[in-house]
Each structure stands twice: as C-alpha cells, then as structure tokens.
Image 1: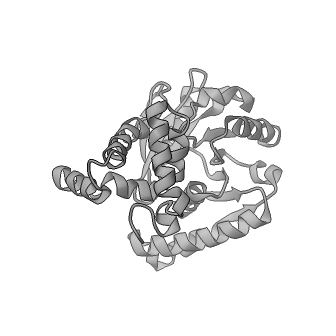
Image 2: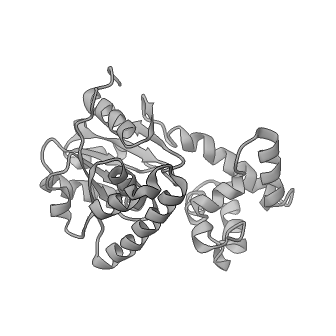
Length: 290
C-alpha cells in the first residue's frame, strides 16, 4: 500500500465534518499544528456548542500540552473557521475528515454530497472506528482519494492516527495522509489492508469486554479490576477508567448489536449505569465519580 513517505503532505487546508467530541479534537489539533481548519456542523445550535468545546480545549491544552500555555492554544482557537454551510466548508479543502455519527447511510450520503462541492483533488477521509472505508468509498465519487484516518479520544495525549485505505486508494494519497498525520503531531499507524477494528480497537475491544465480563459476572468490582491491571502491567489506566474516558454509550451501542453474550453485557451496562445517567467522564460519573 505504501511507497516511500513524501517530504511534505502539501495538505494545508483541512475541513472537519462534525464537531462532536472527536471531531472537535481533530479540528483543534490540526489548527494547533498550523493547518488552516474549517469545522462544519449541521446547525448554528451545534456550532454554539462547539465553540464551548473549543474554549474548553484551549484550557485543556494550556494545562496538559507543553508550550500551549504561552498563547499557542488560544491562537489555534482563534484561527478556526466554523460554518453550517456544507458547500462553503469544503470549497477549497485539501483534505476533508468526516467525524459524524456511525451510520453508514449517513456517511455515504454526506460524502456523495460533498463530492459535488469539493475540488477534484481533495482527499476524503473517514474517522469511522467501526466501518471499513470500502463500505463508504464508492459513494464518494473518488475512490482513489478515499481512505480512513482514525484518531483516538484525547488526541493530544493518545496521539495515534490509523491510516487505512481500500484496494482502490492511490498509494501516493495514502502516503500523503500518513505524512499529514505526522505533521499534526500524531504517530501514524499505516494499516496495509482493511481490518475491522483497525489496530487499536482490535486490541482494545476484547480487552474491555473481558473486564466487563468480570464486573457483570460478579467476580470483581471495577476498581479492583483496574487495580490489578495497573499494578500487574504498569499501565497508567485500568479498563474501567478507559470506559469512562470513551463514554459508556458507544460500547453499549456496539455490544447491543453483537451476539447473545455481548447483548447481555450491554443490558447490564444499561441497567446499572447508563439508565442512571452514569455515562462516563463527560457526564461527571460512570464507573467513577469526577
């Protein structure tokens, strides 16, 4: 899939579709790294919420990212362009990164629409964590310039970027996106053929599932499972701390469409946590209180 990496990606104008948790982080990190970034969402109400998210990221970067407190984070925030006009959002983009809900028809429809508006040379990328790029790429109208670019939550800290193309992705485009990921402070992870779950989730999902089985089955309390993992491996976080960072709704949605065992775990998670408003860090409580 890959050739020798280019010296520069030549990707300067970046549009991010969706300003949810991860979409906002992708947009902010790209702006922080010097890219010209447009963040799109479907309404002014959504953009108002995004403005608060971006303000929060300024404070987070100033606290956690070396050098950000000297005004660099605020400068990144000030440089962001926010719009609810889809045509304007992609009109001069070098790269469009989609970070909208994990609904295949919604993603396919969105890419078909922006194909009408974006320049012919624009690269399209999906940040999907569960869908293969080949499930979407034909709708984009540019299969040679379509791939997946998957980021992890808390992008400034968990700075991996998984790059996965399809058999029709141009290898030169693949390499440009790998280089782009490096330019915005990520550690690129080239994936040489399509794999459900990519690298991170292929490892993480079974790990988190095993932890949930221990708690739901009454074998051990979540805090004790976390303690064992941290002490035994030296890892900074246990699985239930990771659940809270990810948010419990996403794992629930994935498990509720799984096999009988997975659906049973999803129901336990729903009854004991989600129905009680304990959905993770963003809600102030999940397996832990914040």
